[in-house]
Image (cartoon, rainbow, N blue to C red; front, side, top):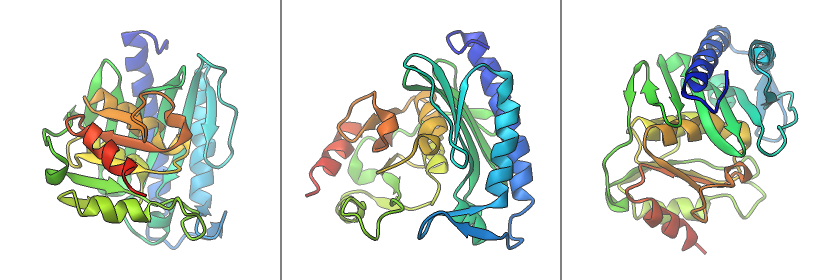
Length: 265
């Protein structure tokens, strides 16, 4: 399973999808069943389903020689040039805890600091996405491609807000208001992985968010690129995505959106 080869990437996508499906089944067993909720922070939640899903995925992906970093138990990224699985065992935990269906299992592989492939399974939505750079992307088995919208004013966008939004000035509120006035509409889903996958399949034309963690964006960023979209930092750089400030679009108005974000005081 060499991520540098077409065959290797295809095998790794299949492995990630199989693992995400099983983890998704385990997580979905607790949906709308009032799971016990713990607080990792003022508004950052965790349940036993998050932890059990990550334990399963850590064991399942251990068949590969790659490093593993998960949201709940952490891990150490590979050295520069190496490969690392970044796994969110339950992205959208707040949604899950409130019985809202926008949650998923997200598995992404970074190699040399770049997103290479990923699989995302959203069991309550009955949707799954896969993608590998150079191999294309899928939504529930069908080819997935980005939209054709070419102007910010015609775009349906998505965004989110960081966990420290109550105390930090970099909370995305001003950008949300400014860009809401320029775009056709802006949605707030509550799952970065699903937001990115919706860009990949053409549901959304673009997405931006601050302070994402590697497991939030790894799979989705790879899937967007595999679907023909563009993913950069807020400065428009193709690298450095793990720093967490991310813009993803169909590529047609990407620079316009980057500029609009930069113009916010």
